[in-house]
Every structure is written in C-alpha cells, then in structure tokens.
Length: 304
Image (tube, rainbow, N blue to C red; front, side, top):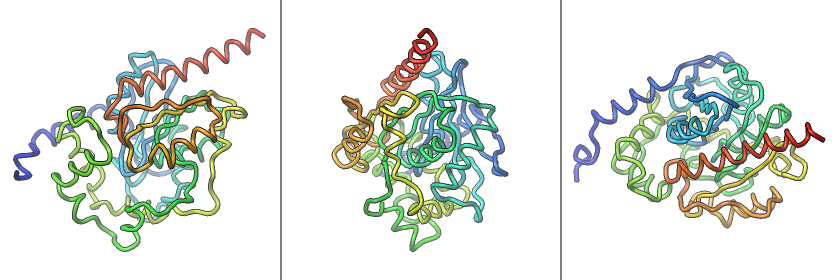
C-alpha cells in the first residue's frame, strides 16, 4: 500500500488547521507557545510528554469541559506549535521552569495537574516550585526518576541533529504508534496520527526534540517520590496506567509509582502508552473524580 493510499494529506492539513483554530498563541519566558483551552470552572493543566504536544489532549479537553472544568494544555518549547530556539535550556529543570512561567502567563493561580510521560518529571519540578498552588495531581504512565536505561530517542539524539527513517515516513510512523502507543486502531485516524508526526517534525525536522532527549539525564533533579506520596502531599493524588504500555510498562514503572504514592490501588485501563487516544472518556472521568475529591477535602477542612 502506498503512503498516499494510507493517508489523505488534505485531511491531515485540515486536521492540523482545526487544531490551530482551536487554540491560541501566548508568550512565557520569551518563548512563544500554543495553548488549547476549553470550559469554565476550576483549571486543569494537562502536561504532555515526548514527543507529543497539546494535540494529544484534544479529546480529553472537551470531555473535561463537559465535566465543568477549564481544561488547559500548552506546548512545551521544542514541540508542537511552540518556538524551538537552539539556545533554550531543554533540560527537565528548564522545561519545569517554563511550565511555571506558562501557568502564570495564562493567568492561572491554583490548578489541578495531570502529567504523562516526560510531562511527569517536568510537572513534578513545577510542583516543587509551588505545591500550594496544586489542587490535585493525576498521574498517567510516567516515571519517578531518570535512573533507567536510555530510551531509543536519547540514543538517537546523541548521534543525530535531525530525524530520518521511521519518523519521516507517515506509514512507518503510524505503524510505530499503533505498535507501542495506541491499542485501539479505531480510536484515531491515520490523519490524526500524521498530525502528531507533523507537530513533532515541523519546522526543524525534530532537531529541538533531539535536544530535549540529549538533555534528559540530570543528576540534580529527582527522584520525585515525595511529590506523589499522598500521605504528605497537600493535594489528592490518583494514578491510572495504560496496562498495555510497552514503553513505560505496568511492571517496571506502574507498580513502583503505586508504591511511591501509597495508594491502595491504581486504575489500569485497556490502553497502550497514549491512553488519551485509547480511553479519553475514562481519562477525563478519572481526572474529574480526583479534582472533585480535592473540592470535598477542602470543604471538609473548612467545616471542621
């Protein structure tokens, strides 16, 4: 099957255009970025990981709005529709500092935080800056430290400044996403998957993403066990995992997260790594439930 037969580039362009229209640009720390937001009520900040962007949360955002929240997801520098300066600090610490600046620039005071993939360590760094601003923390398929073997993207980043091969091919990229990222092939179209690829590669062929991958190893950040420990955190914590995730597997990463959180259980969803694509309804329900528990906790404390 040819690539043209697999993916309709006109639909890709239209889907990408709709994504742009659904959001807006803003500036934080001198970086021009992009945010999708919808709804009114308490704010939920949705952190994407690597190599994704705010596009990953498009289904969850609308569902959270239906739940009565203001759902917000912005692009980290080097990804999506954000600037990709070559001199930016793309480390976990640098991206965490940008996250705080972005939240401020968007006029957000207190917020419910949702983290996924590398958005976990980045979001955890932001929590350490101002834990009193976090109303609840929902954790999705992420990691507590960088003490693990390098991911393929890190190795690639050490030897290349541009992406070639699988990520430049719409067909191969789709096969990769379905193999490791998305369990339900009917949950997302080929064109939507190609938008993910375009938002990674354009306009610098993924050079900024590779800079991020080269900057992941830092000895002065993490582990973030205290951030997720519900016994001491000043906010409710909940954890959900795509149980079919071959990247951040339940055994190697999910169960250690459960132990660190000291929750009695974690919610396992029938999903791979990108559970926002596989199970957007379940993800939104989980986030909304955790956020409401924060409200109930606050109300109980006020009535004591």
